Image (cartoon, rainbow, N blue to C red; front, side, top):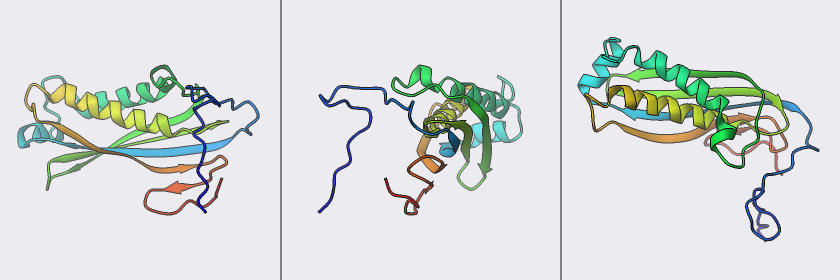
Length: 168
């Protein structure tokens, strides 16, 4: 018989509730998320050659992603504020489909997970690329936002496409 898990952000009455993490142990926690940006040939070339009118697209997007990860608790209502140890935003350009893969990694030593910070970092970095290129490419698509990896905490390690190593 399958046991249904209780959603942690709902109280006994079904109301939104911030989880109390005060009794959870502090531990090392890491997460990585990514998304894909699909560009047209002109906008892809501008990024690749660093010739966009608004400046260094990937440099600005990197800083925006880092800043956004640091503000996650301010924009996602039930997230806890975390003391981030590191946030890293990286880009991989692929000529074949004129795409950019945005990867956001975050780490902390805290009482709760850091998945949302990595997801927000990847999201805002990609939105910044969009903002900087929208004048030359109105059909930019941002796709495939996904958590690739998380480690730490009670639920253990998660790797996209693999089974969890620990059970709740």
